[in-house]
Image (cartoon, rainbow, N blue to C red; front, side, top):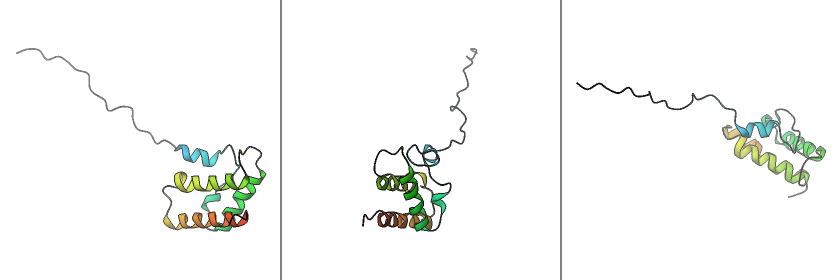
Length: 107
């Protein structure tokens, strides 16, 4: 019988570790807005919109208007950061968009 050649054991790659999502970092550490902690967890769309408006108007680092910055952050959170949100909270956030439009007179 011929001697068998030893082969290296194949690995499936590095062990998977829980990575934090980049979208969460953007929500926590936005360069444009200093958001109040837990702003998107509120059940009141008026409070969410008011907090975003306040943050956008107080910011000196944003690149566009306060309205666009606030709406952009809210839309980003709904589409990326809050991808796994329950339907009830998504409804609250969608209502917050309407409230934000109202606060900035963009009806």
